[in-house]
Image 1 (cartoon, one colour):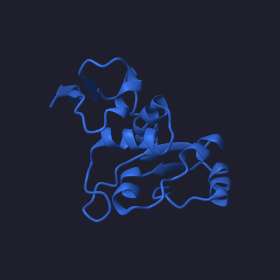
Image 2 (cartoon, helix red, strand yellow):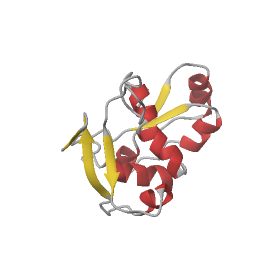
Image 3 (cartoon, helix red, strand yellow):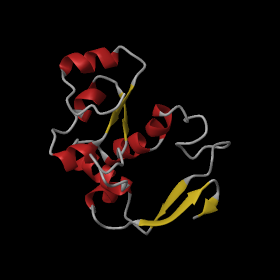
Image 4 (cartoon, helix red, strand yellow):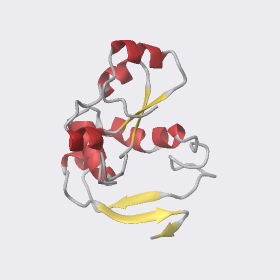
Length: 143
């Protein structure tokens, strides 16, 4: 389920008792001036949270996933590791591709981002606007 910017306690409780993955689109809230989804409350209720961009001209004209990670940590109060999980393995699970992609695991597709040298994952979300991606590998091939 996505577009969860206006998720209240009742909706969180209903989602928590389901097999639904809560997909949050923080750049939509940013672009349209909407409230940010309550990611921390969702995670406190053991919801699986995924992050996406909703890349389209009407509500989020950017597919910059580095910016999504920054918004997740700065505005949604997610920890960097939580944000990375929400972008990768949880995002793959949300579109039912978790058995093929989303983590670095034998037998999964080799889809990776290689960063420029950084001090750790905690550095990534707080450098919004900086380009820290050095290489993109899709299907085992550098693009």
